[in-house]
Image (cartoon, rainbow, N blue to C red):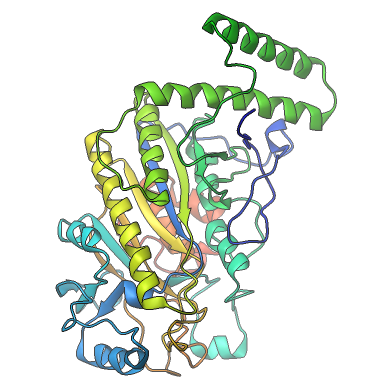
Amino acid sequence: MTNKIFSRRDFMASSAKLGMLGSVASMGLLSNVKDAHAATDFKALVCVYLFGGNDGNNLIVPLDTTRYTQYQKIRGPVGLALSTSAKTLLAPRTSTLQAVTSPSNQAFAFHYGMPEIDALYGQGKVAVVLNMGSLRQPLSKAQYSAGVGVPPQLFSHPDQTLQNQAGTPAVAATGWGGRLVDLLGTGGHLDAVALNSGGLFVEGATVHGNLIPANGSLNLSGLNAWPQSASDARKAALLQMLNASNASNTNVMAAAANKSLANGVDLVTDLQAMTSTATINTIFPGTPLAQQLKTVARLIKMRAAKGPGRQVYFVGMGGFDTHSQQAWTQWDNLVKVSQAMSAFYQAMGEIGCANQVTSFTMSDFGRSFEPTSNGSDHAWGSHHIVLGGAVQGGLYGQFPDFTLGGPDDATGRGAWIPQISNQQFGASLGRWFGASATMLETQVFKDELSNFSRRDLGFMGP
């Protein structure tokens, strides 16, 4: 093969960008998964992962007098505070907070690098989930200080990356996107796809993610002979050998390897078909993230045409570990995120799937409210974006109290204790995806979602 195909994996490398290795789960060694529930329509979830820990404090800024005064005071001296007067924030907006006990009006503004996301928010297509992060249960500062119910390995890039994608602070070999597809997918090799870098998010117990290049181009060495009939004959012979070997093979590892190669042949066939048939007219920027999302758009166009089903995708970009030079670096990164996600939404409208596809951000963690010299440190709760035609736009949750050492600050430097958990976030998306309350509580977010009284935040419509 000219490009490696990893269509099975069960091991996540201890790094911010995760790798894929082969798994024997597809050979029937994991048999405790419930039977899939057939979907009657098509839907897809697209995780946009911001590697390194995006500073949500600058992604969206509250403009109420108390918080904004604290924001300018604490972040201002080293240039991290964004200002309406300096036009580093977009035009102010006001929204009624949702998924809270006492809804109230909240003034805010987006970072000036995100005009596309701001415009889509104005159209009601963007929800912002505030102060979300890794939790086992609702957590007060007193409980945090006493070590009661605190998730392990906070502030660690690899650990929090795994926990976010797994949807649990516990050790897990699967991601919450993969578990959703275990229950709702059709079993196709395009049900779970990661682009450019692997992600635990798309790994299920029976459905395993395929890792493909950002441009979606894969070829099989030796199968590009001329004329085409010669290539077709070689491929047919290869598949015949693999099928014959599997029929008589008692070696589990060898059989798994053969099955993986056969799946790879099918995947390459589909990707080659995508090149010629699944064209997208929407203009995408030339950035790596945008090109990943363009490939996702083409794959969705091809898969949606085949009828009902479910897909999960994982794309990502790095550069968010901003210990220094944050003001410029984060602006540059958020420009790329805003433009790429906006183009993807436009492409979904082009192919008639705007209401069937939802994209959302995740990241390792938030960053400290109190800056370093000209950056910020690892922290905890952060703010995230959800975009799609089925999204009920608005602000969900609430901004933390910006008092250093206050009731929402775990460390004294502005590491916000999350008020919304990854499980609640994922369950809200999972309900729209088609999972029942029972599936979500007992299989997708087992043992932890039930700890939270509000299990659907309400940011997704039908």
